[in-house]
Length: 192
Length: 334
Image (cartoon, rainbow over all chains, first blue to last red; front, side, top):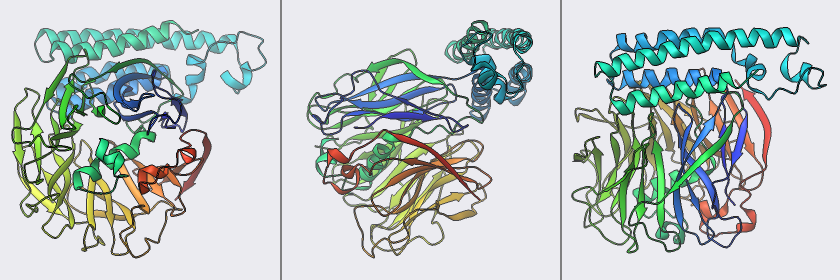
């Protein structure tokens, strides 16, 4: 049996299965696998069904906000490398993303921003969310950081729309960046 | 695809070899794209079949690349066992294509392998006599075919592009008339530079196999030495090499013959920061993943179970195909 996985840069391994993938040795190559991933976490891959027929899939690897902003930065830089944006235009878009990343803090703070909140008093809270043992104050701080990052991401979206208005980005290219930024904002708004 | 499986991934051609390499990556997602990815989850699956894809065993749709905006490329094998390329937009529109001179023979056709941020696709196709050629397909659908000077002109020899970066630079392998592998770099303007990794063997089916090029033009891949052991390499933009790159624990004995079971280190992908990932075969039936940072630090990802025997030997033993059960053992090595 083959299984797909994503290994994050921090070493975390996330296994996954494509729906419809064969689960037994009835086909010659049952299971699923990924073959490519981009900076936005879009995965393309292949799975073999129970009859041994190959099918394609795309899926989404969802990461915490810091990682998502980093991915978005990489996408903008890819656009610059490909000549789809000038270096100046790239900086124009990267500036609010850099600010958002600074507001969110280092990646090792991501657990406090992304893990499901077990609630004050949960025994796991100090270990999972804050090695120093801070609780409500830390959550309040995170809310403030998230709010600042959301403002930066909204600024980013505005700048993308400006470039689209002046036809420096196509509808598809700009739409991809906006969708990614909106996804991060949605994540931030859903967390404590 | 049927022939590949039925043949047990025997290297019947360089094209098949490249397909084999891609399929070996089934268990290796190349998550080297970002500098800091915390824990996450995989969901929102959308499955699809290219129109015309065959529905027989080992036929169907195979994806090989996705770019920054979600455009996917790959190939599909039709009911007559002819391979065709396709491109799928992020919105789900699938466009099949064939290189103009691809010969629609059994197990022949068009094999796309890589798509860049601008939507350009590269890959290979077979002409009537089995001669292999490269192509690049622009985002507007225009296809340019090319051959590397010095590439062999007979069956299972020729030009095999495998990776295209955001600048439109393409790398890949060409097989000369003596079936020795060499690397090449093709600029977006069409200028081709050939190269060999230092230490690469010069015998039959030995040599240099570039696999991936990043946005800066840095190339990684592997070479097989005269003892039939594979080593990784990095080729810098100025043409200088970092080689050999050997993962600790990689097999060091190729047995002195061209074995079907590869031994050694095989990088598969390089990101814009210069980090590479790939696999290494320990020579005892085990295959493991690795990440090597641009600074040269190796982080090992060990998989439990034995290597899926089918992938290497053509002697399938499904009971040994333990693709899951990953250990969390990471080991740093300077």
